[in-house]
Image (tube, rainbow, N blue to C red; front, side, top):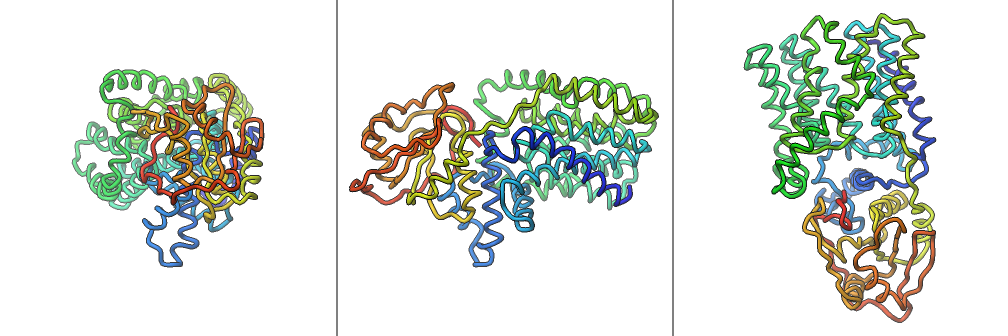
Length: 507
């Protein structure tokens, strides 16, 4: 595939994606998804270290601990580091802003569509059908949803797809170069997010078709590159490997197996899936076998080894089904291809409709808070509000000048995925003591009428009776410590390993 075509496809797909992303609020709303703020704050921290800490000779661990002390939403350790280094280098080149964050997300998804076109062209799919496959990838509901909700899933899908492509070449040629490329791409994908681990199952399935133990050689390099990180961070990641209580693991496996099969089948839409499974007669060679096996390994891993059933994790299989559909329709003329794309996308979006990105009102509220002398503030929320608040603070002040505390750390306690939940502040006096010992100057309260109030809400209202309230938005109220009532103790550090917010898992 010529380099010019790669550039043209990347620009075309980026332009196509920008329209729905902008229309759905991607460039205006806060980073309010379950994981968005954790990914963003972690990336900003790495960016700040490369821009400042590294030049000042600070150690990475000391810098990270200090950054987490100010902005307790850093999640490196729970997730591997590659995505955060990608963010950091991007911010070093184009700068940090809400626009640059979303442009990075758009370009990663556009690159996934471009890689799909590339793979199609290498397997004798004509250009119109290859472009149709790329458009089906970038405009699929899950691709757009993952792009708007800033996270690592598009990057994982891109790296897994490229690794599977390298595996196809390696399976066909058995060359050292292709095996090394597969190992490096697979390791990079696994060091981006754990749902890339299905790649490790692929060589074992390939042994069925070619009984050559040499197929397992790249596994040694992958494990050598990946296992040290996962071993060091094993305590933080165990709840991701086996989420929830292990007592109901059989039930979770059964649930994940059934739901994942449905999610994989519908990931690219029912029409694309039907065309993909109908294309097997068109596959004349085993050269695409590693790519075709990926949905199976993905289902097995997420159903029986690490039981998860999340729609966003299925983005990995979308380009594979679109490629297989393109193999079947490669002889079609442009007009039928356009109709096929429109019909496929219509049915896909009817089954998985996109919703505008929710706006919490934190953008103006954060700006108002930063204009006040509040060196130590606390955010309490009953609906994933702590993350967006910290994300907005980090964008406005990437180099921390204030300390932010989270109510989910001080007033309650739980494990990462929400287990073992308990309230720590069981009286107004306990709330007051926490506010004093943590030297809280401002408390930001985010509430939603549609969500049950926090269990310590009444105690907190009593403790804040003498504080000065300011209604920043309909859902956000700021309380300032009254003059002449200073806190009576030094600031205490927050825990190194963050628990979840409220009764829901927080990332």
